[in-house]
Amino acid sequence: MIAIGSDHAGYDLKVEVMAHLDEKGVKYHDFGCYDGEPNDYPVVARDVCEKVVKGEFKFAILICGTGIGISMAANKVNGIRAAVCSDYFTAKYTRLHNDANVLCMGGRVIGAGVASEIVDIFLNTEFEGGRHQRRVSLIMDIEKE
View 1: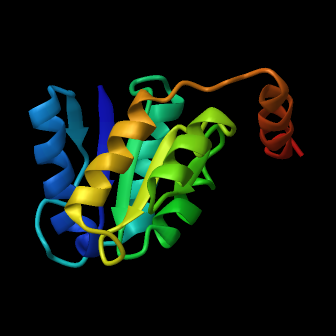
View 2 (view 1 turned 60 degrees about the vertical axis):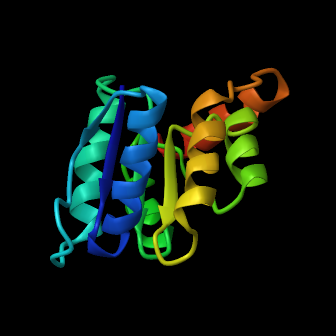
């Protein structure tokens, strides 16, 4: 099961992504927002990411207008490696090389078709480990300083 959340600017794309997940039979929990009314993406990001860090969800998908703000908020939570992805290549390599656990996207940047492809590759790509594990560990060490 994955966690999903958005602000108002990402709401429409989140609805499209959830429909795609339903088609694929992927279970998820929606942490809001639940309509297009203005809300604050840092609150949603924190709520979702704390659940990921606690192990309640392996992955999360977060969506705001650009994906940038919500990813910045997500990365403030210790244990999170959030990446903004807007194409197949970045989605694949953020999993392969960075072991990202949160996918961030921009509802004003990409459409539903591209978002669906990004979600699929993110959720179905395994971390390579090896030489990349050392770098991921170095990233995580920054949180301890």
